[in-house]
Every structure is written in structure tokens, then in C-alpha cells.
Length: 125
Image (cartoon, rainbow, N blue to C red; front, side, top):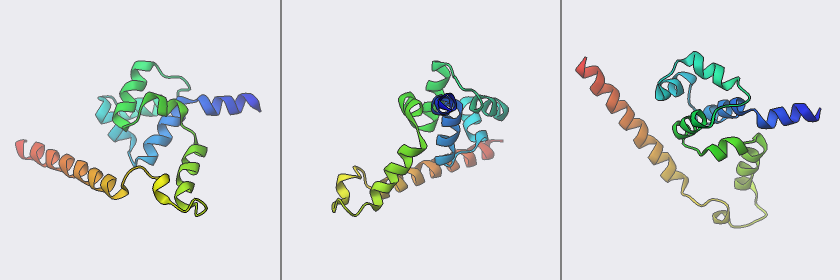
């Protein structure tokens, strides 16, 4: 049982898959950003080990560090979000070091810029 837990904790492909899903990104989007096929992403996400250069490229597209991918765990995500509902601390600002609205606006602006690029590409065809 220990070996299956170790495999689960070190399986980089699964971690990439989960981070991608949490970011709301499809395999096709990740593949396009990396310049590879969706099938290659599927194979990558099934790989237990991934070369550092590939991992760096994937991390950049996902907007995280390679260390974040390597250290990723479902438990850390749940613990992170549980801090927002923890009323025992009394002060929300101790847990959240950024304004969530700023992150929403940032995401919206990136999506808007992406859509504008698509429109320009379609106009040029």
C-alpha cells in the first residue's frame, strides 16, 4: 500500500492533469500553447516521470512553478480553500494575501485579449 501512495504522490502526469483541470484548461488548449497534439498531452498526463525541460514548459503555460507541480497534492488544495471558511482565526486577511477581485479582473483581461487575438486572426484569413 505504501508503494501505491508513493506512486500517487510522485506521478507528475496526474498532477499536471489536476492542475490543468483546476485552472479550467482543456488538453487541447494546453497542447496548442505547447505546440504539440492533444494526444501528446494525454500521453504526458499518463506519465509518472517527465523531463525537466518539458515540465518547465508545462508549468509556464499553467502559470505555476515546476516546484508547485512537484509538490501538488489534493490535500493542500482542500486545506487552502478551507482557510477561507475557517472562522476560528477571526481575520480573513491573514489567510488571503491577494484581492480575489483583482484575480478575476486579471483573468477577464487575459481572456478578452485572447479573444481579440482570435478575431484578428480570423479577419486576416
